[in-house]
Amino acid sequence: MLDLKQIEKAYERVAGVVHRTPFTYAPILSKMTDYEVYLKKENLQQTGAFKLRGAFNKIATLAEDGNRGGVVAASAGNHAQGVAFSAKYFGIEATIIMPESTPLTKVQGVRELDATVILYGSNYDEAYGYAIGYATEKKLDFVHPFTDELVIAGQGTVAIEMLEEIPDLDLIAVPVGGGGLISGVGMLVKAKAPNCQVIGVAAEGAPAMATSYHEGRAIDTTGVRTIADGIAVRDTSPITLDYLLKYVDGMELVCEDEIASAILFLLEKQKVLVEGAGAVAVAALLHGKINLPKGSKIGIILSGGNIDVTMLSLIIEKGLIKSARKMKLIVTLVDKPGSLMLFTELLSKVDANIVQIGYDRTSTDLKFGDAYVSVDLETKGEMHQEEIRKSLEVHGFAFWEEH
Image 1 (cartoon, helix red, strand yellow):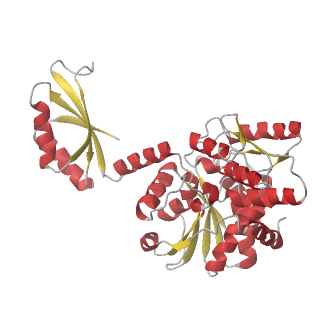
Image 2 (cartoon, helix red, strand yellow):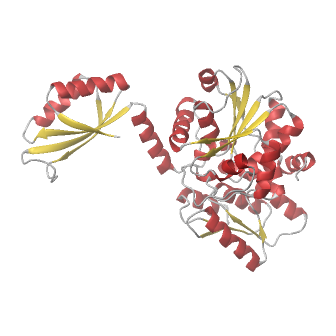
Image 3 (cartoon, one colour):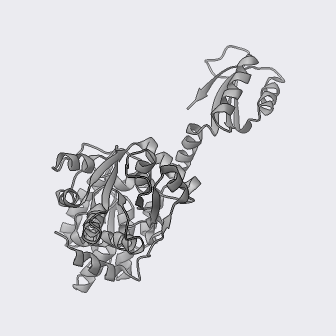
């Protein structure tokens, strides 16, 4: 298995190319949880994710050994950009196989690094199978995102930086998909700071590694479905599972709503933009899945920031509705002059700001002479929304809410 010297050697290789990302105190998160919380911001890494560390260490080693014939990788985005960046750095051609569902921004990011992109399959595992065959056929080196020891060693360099800055951490929480990051982090932490716990956090929609960890054997799933696409891995790697069983103290799962709320929390309260995978450890902390004595020092790895803007927009919209800062209503009005004005005046009196409005008089659900008004309102919390509901009821408006 991997040893400390390999991770330290990896750190020598990546130093000067990979950013030493900020590891900073999170005051609001700390106050909310009664812990001393620090965020390792790998979302600010070159290429936007920690994956560059492992990819660079692997390709640097290939270059040192004289293997410059080209590399192949399979990835939904972050590993792809890490491989593409590293290959370009060493003047090596890179071919990346990405699932057909990969967000356009991630595909463009890889192509901008001069790599060839082939879109194949509906998920990572299908893209991976194609990539293995492609690499074998073309006799090229395959750069695995997490089962390669050189890649794992590179990922472990994150923990070197964290412990150099705060050596007395009580716990490090790590996002888990295939297990490459937590394998490297766990090995390094247990060698350097054995009293520090290492906890993994996975998405409920991609639970293979968490299930396997708790069962003590590799268990694959039939599919994955999560907004945390960076950790959406269907099958368990026996190689990384061995590292988890040896070095990791626990595994937690977070649901989609918890991930989304963590993304929005980090954006709004910590002024940090992360993708779904990058938010899962914060989600676990916010929802009480990490339990330590008050005042414990916790390091959380924000593993990446490459979130699709369409997904981000959806998360923000749903988050505003869930937190009672936005209200979506459909109201029935009499379809005659002045009705809409009376309705909007009523909203004005209860201090509800209209941000979007629509008028429908043709729906087959309507009685003749009626109309539907769909309206999105900015509101100031649940009490304000209840005031709006009561006002509509008092004035005889029939309505329902969209959630």
